[in-house]
Image (cartoon, rainbow, N blue to C red):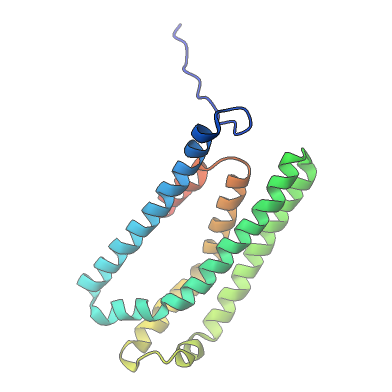
Length: 179
């Protein structure tokens, strides 16, 4: 019988610090690069095949979408602090409660913000002085974005939870699957 090669887990406490940090950070760096690459390709496809006004519509919505991305990422980071503290203190019950509370809260927040965004989509674009030639397409783009907001929140919070548990590879795999 052949022996299976066992995969060595990263232990940031006992392994060499430089090596363990690199192995932990590498999937996060790759994920960020992949996300940026995805955004570039998305802009090229929209600009070339849908048109300049569609690309301008996406650009007009950029600052709005960035606010929600910041909320999702910030919520994930804040939650990961609590989860990792409970993990370090070996308080598994509290850790599980923190994770489930985080997931429920951010799903709820994502649904509420997405609903409010859909309800006030046109008003938001008017307040931003969105040019009339791209207004309609920007409204459609933002509507789609607001419908997907709960998924954005859940991905970012789940990625942060996995990373707080010492797993930076699973969020990368989820990102690759999502894209």
